[in-house]
Image (cartoon, rainbow, N blue to C red; front, side):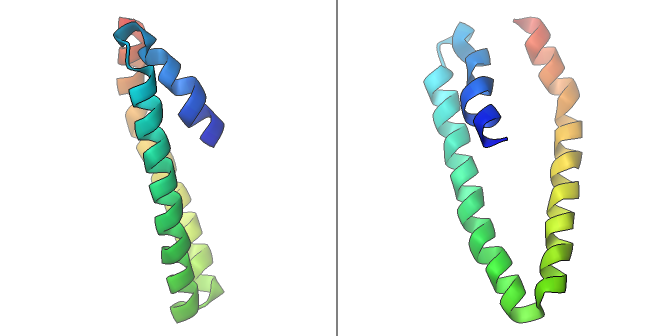
Length: 82
């Protein structure tokens, strides 16, 4: 998924001359999220155990899927405008 986010998706911004900007911003947020989740899930595991961490993993997956589903119509409009 990381490959799709930081390499394929920014190509859509070539028309605007913003491929590098889009790639850099997406890459930044991917790595910030990775760092935050590393410490966050570690803290949850230390305090509440693995069962809580697995619930958090599942909740994060559901939230990510919901946000992606929410963004689909907006992305389709953007893609058609090109």
